[in-house]
Image (cartoon, rainbow, N blue to C red; front, top):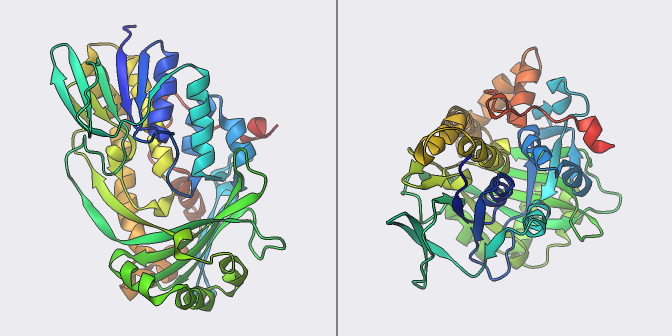
Length: 407
């Protein structure tokens, strides 16, 4: 197999996983990171069976499970106390299968430590602003004008707002306020559930257990509250007390959690974009993860899709043909699944984040009941597990052996 000199822009899950996989194939890999000290941005996320398959191939699945929280189901109630979401991993029919709630910092730490341990070069303090073609390769340019040597390939893993990707898609009306809190003693929440509460589709609160962070000592959770981007300024002006009253009116059990939020700086507003770069492959360039496609996190697929993209890239690079043919093969391995989950997420998001009452009625009185009768439970489980469309087989992967990982 030909060996390439590869630059990877971005130290998120996509970039770090791609660096490890390509380095292990014998390629010369250099990671470029904008921060002086690489660090993650964000709160909790879900590692689905699809993403864990990649992490298992990297040898990291036991550590992920050790620092995460096994989630057996996603469970949501509407404001009337009726079930509006009930997706159970047991319905996959895979022994021990679960989602894993984990802090983004833990996923980053485990991937980053592996990259360091394997001696992968990491250039920090390099905010990538552009890329260009030169004779014999492609360069990266920093926002202060510094330019790298020419590489055989540049991998764009810079996320939704990547300056290397063409503008596309749109920002969604709704985002969410996020924070990380300690898991409370005598918690009124179930440590094995992602729990949510809804007022129609206009309001949503959620609690996701995220385990014990790497180098942490206490169990944690991520708390989130749905909010329109256009309402964020008004939320800031109204103050925390008004917001806490809203949350507790919907979900009284949250009162103890909210007592630990004493300032608005503890909450981060995340806005979501629905976008997909039509052609992820350019000359000596490929976009992966959110730099290629991004969507609302309602189906919990973001990091998992990024990991699958990284694995597909490694499979493509290991295939036959010239570099461009290999990159095209990598994109083909993922294109169908990406398009499918873009469509599914586009359809599902308004059921939980929308101003329109009929979206909640459709969810509560049609889709939720259908999810309780066969084959609804299995379809629902495969949907949240990231397995609809069979993304693992083309990559030579399989659903992990959860019981073996847990030993």
